[in-house]
Amino acid sequence: MKLSAQYTALKTITIKEFLRFIRIWIQTVVPPAITVALYFIIFGELIGSQIGDIDGISYIDYIVPGLILMSVISNAYSNCVSSFFSAKFHRSVEEMMISPLPNYVIVAGYVSGGMLRGIVVGIVVTIVSLFFTKISFHSYSVTLAVFILTSILFALGGFINAVYAKTFDDISIIPTFILTPLTYLGGIFYSINMLPEFWQNASLANPILYMINAFRYGLLGVTDIDLTTAFIIIILFITGLFIFAVRLLDKGTGIKP
Image (cartoon, rainbow, N blue to C red; front, side, top):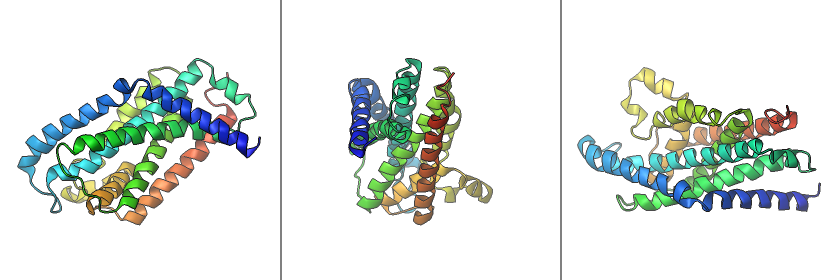
């Protein structure tokens, strides 16, 4: 299949995925903004005023990067998992599988849609945060890079979840029992330096910790994790998950009877 045809197919899938979630923006974009606003009111204004500064930064400013990235993570993941599973459920994905379209283009298309939803929601949440605090960018390049790479990573995670899922209930197991705990324990509301040594070391096994800290560095210039290490881990996860997702489609996992 020619590169021009592959590009057209990729663009078509991406546009379809974008229109899919933007048509119902009241359900996909507004709820995360309301949720984050409540976090700011409860944790930032009420509880945060009692906590004080962390690393010389006010508590409400300190949690801003984590809350933004939490929205990016959950929405990039949920968009991809729900979209691809729906395609499996309605058997429309089989039409793509029997076409000359390479599987890596199919994966890239769905992941691009998830990435776009993560980015759109992230931007909306960032705008909401401006009503509660002032955002200053320490490094635009780091902020943008982490923003995009994180959305790609969790869109890939959602895609893989959808491949294995057999029922609609299966697409909620990973977000509920794995993704949500890892996100809340990833340093959104605290610095790992505040933890006992054992839990500091245990936290290093959480990949989300590296993303949140890299994003916090991009916005505030502070981090608990080496920035280079964070980017290496993020890129390795993206590469590994992309290869794994393509291999799953090559084998017909979760699609072939």
